[in-house]
Amino acid sequence: MEKQRNSHRIVSMLIAAAVAGGVAGGAAAQTDAGGTVGGTTTDNTSAGNIHPTGMPQTEQQGDVSFVSGGVGLDESTALRRAQSQWPLSLRFTGPSSAYVANVHVQIVDAGGKTVLDTASKGPYMLVRLHPGRYTIHATYSDVARSQTVTVRGNGSARATFAWQVSR
Image (tube, rainbow, N blue to C red; front, side, top):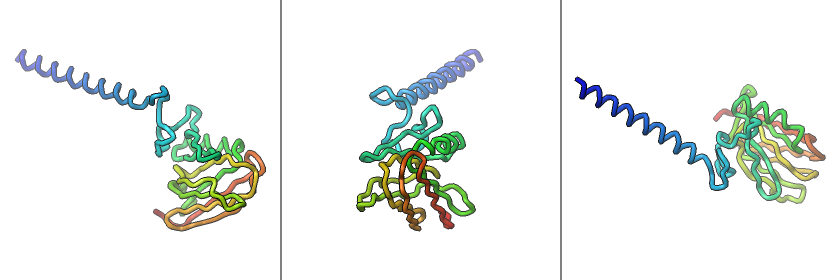
């Protein structure tokens, strides 16, 4: 009987050690070579790229920076609050005004040059563009929409794209 109790204790201790090692290993795996904890700009999920303010991590494509997300309440609230600090804000909705993600977004300047080509990670996308006229092409569930906007300064241009198709 005593031998059986000792065996159970040893097994319990081994399981606890394995779990503790796994948790520590997971935390170490989330720290990159530069010491940054969490995701990276190459991590395509919104989770792991959240700034302590609730904002997703800013991404860069050429000289255009952008953030995209808004799946959770904290993140969507942070993105809505930050709209006035970004020259262009986009919102994507589906049937019954439900938010959608994974919208292919292409922004083209007045000269026909594509300045941003990406997919949204949520219903909101904030984009830092130089002042000017841009055409935004947004595609969701193989249905394309386009809008032209004039960016003058922070918070000056907003576009909402709505689809009545579900994925």
